[in-house]
Each structure stands twice: as structure tokens, then as C-alpha cells.
Length: 424
Image (cartoon, rainbow, N blue to C red; front, side, top):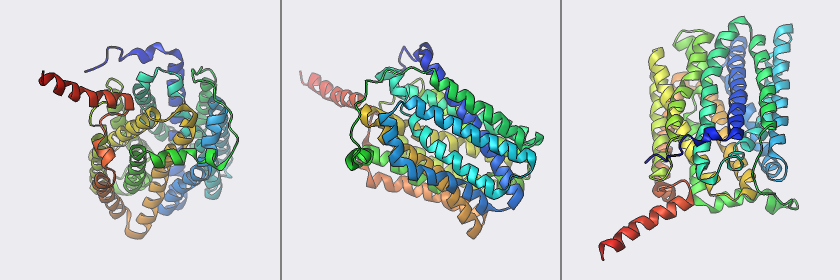
């Protein structure tokens, strides 16, 4: 049954600024990597180099996972995000200047991508901790879904617009991205949070690794994070899109932009539904079922040679990826105390970004060894196998009913009350 306050997110002005900030930063990020992907492949004709872009984004997230969580829990999270947005703006500006003046080479692009990766390592997990301080607790899952919708709106528009703007030159794309990163920085500065004051704790190994400890002790959160890491990593196919666009589907940068946007179209449809419902029934089965369906969509995309079918498969790909991600974030944020949320979110977000970026690198290596199509098909089968294996390894996740522990307790009490009533 739909909650009567389903549209109440619109009555939270700071949430609207949060939403606009996510649109701005994601829009710019997606445009950057449409341009980077096409530019790198145009210069090298190498699938492995496209995979290296993913590896360079992955390295900072792993190196920073411990530091990022500690910073997010002990300093103003808005300033962490603002500084990261300014850093990404400077990187986009360097790409624009290098493209305009002709000194931008593939090694320089790789170094700038690494810089973007370090900035994203700080802002991605920190952004995910803002929602509990903006909306009431009972609206957290809806707020997370709304934030995901912002991502999908930007991920639909960003690649498509970036692909068309690339016709005017990569410097045009990077210049637009520079502006949107600065807009995101300004917007996050206007958000006001209602989090309780956090007490500064001495820096010890225990406080630094508190996020890892909390996740290890919570089997439901551990299962949700690891199925995302393993399933999405094996099934990652987005790094191969420039090759599919040019060599298999025989289209140009505008076709690449459409392919990059297709996963977000499916994800937007899914998040639109999730912003209007509460995650109170069969949540664990939804997570595992989403990874299984995700793997099937990768298989279809890998074998397709027809652009509409490829786009349809990528829409399912995006919908399933986003479905399990929203549920995982809802589980994590609803079941983690605020004083540990930054560190737990850093681990969770690092796992997600690792799944995507390592998946790109894995796709590049596999494509260099086996060929592009076999590598994508093998990844699809791998994601399906992970989904089936996690039913056995994490039965707690498979049986999970609700994202929020309070709702789960109510769900458990309801049958007992019904049973008691039937005996009267």
C-alpha cells in the first residue's frame, strides 16, 4: 500500500538542493567519461586502454576507503563534497585546455582520470551519508531512491548530450563539465543538515577500521555489499561500449552517447517506482533476483548486433543494477548508527565503485585475451552464478523482509498477533 505522504520529499527544500547537486555532479561526470572513452579509443584503438581507465578510477577508492570514512565521520561532510567538486572541476578544465591546445596525450589523460578518481573517492561515499540528515528516518529509503533518480536523470542526459557535443570537439564537452562541477559545489554549500553533533574520537586502529568491523559483524549488510561487488564486477560491460558502438553496431559518438544513456533510462523507471513504495517485503530476494536478471541482460547485450536490442538490454542492465543498489543503501543507512555511517558508507561505496571500475578493467583484459563479445558473455554467466551462490552463502540476506530493522520487527510481530487472534 502506498504511503499517503509519497510526495513529501518535495516539501523539503534542502532535499531539493541535494537532488539538484546530484544531478549536476553526475551529469558532468558522465559527460567527462563519454568524451574520455571516445578520445582514448580514437587515439589508441585499444580495448586494454579503455579498461585501464576503469583501473585508474578504482585505485584511489581502495587507497582512500579508510581515510574517507574517518573524514566523513569527523568533519563537515558538506565541505568534503565541496572540495571534491572543485577538484573535479579543475581536472575537467585541464582536459578542456589540453584538447584545445593540442598537448593532451593518452598518458596525460590517464593522470587526470586518476585525479578525478581521488576526488570521487571522497565525494561519492560522503554524498550517500547526507540523506539521513535531510529527511525524517521513515523517509530514508524514499530519499535514497530519489537521489538515485537524480543520478539516473543525469546519466540519461549526460552521455547523450556529451556524445552530440563531442562533434564540436572534446574541449566543448570538458568545458561544460567544468561549469557543472562548480554548480554542484555551490549547491552542496546551501544544504542544512539535522544530524546530531558528532563527538571527535581519538584516531586509533579501532576507530579507523570501525566500518569494516561493523560490516563483518552484520551478515545482512555484508551479503548485500559483496553480491554487488562480485556480480557487478563480473558483469560489467560499459567499458566496451566504444568498441560496440564503432565496430559491432557501426555507429558514431552520438550512438555511443545513446548506449551510455540506455542503462539510466531503465534505472530511472525503476527508481521512479521505488520513490513511491516502502521496502518492507521480500527485500533480500529482490537484491539477489536483481543480480540474476542483471547477468541475463549482459548476455543479451553481448550477443546483440542490433542497436535497439542492445539499448533494451542495457535498460534492463541499468534497472537491475540500480534496484539492488538502492536496496543496499537503504539497508546500510537504516541499520548503521550515524557516528559510524561515514565509515560504513565509505566501505559500501568503495565496493560499488570497485565493482564498476574493476569490472571495466576486467572487461578490457578479458577482451584483449578472448575478444570483446566472448568477454562480455562470460561476464554475464559469472553474474548469474554469483546470484545463485549467494542464496547458499548468505541465507540471512535471502530471507530478509525489510530494509529497515524496525519495519522488519513489525513484520515479524504481525503474523504472531494474527496467530494469537485466531486462537481466541
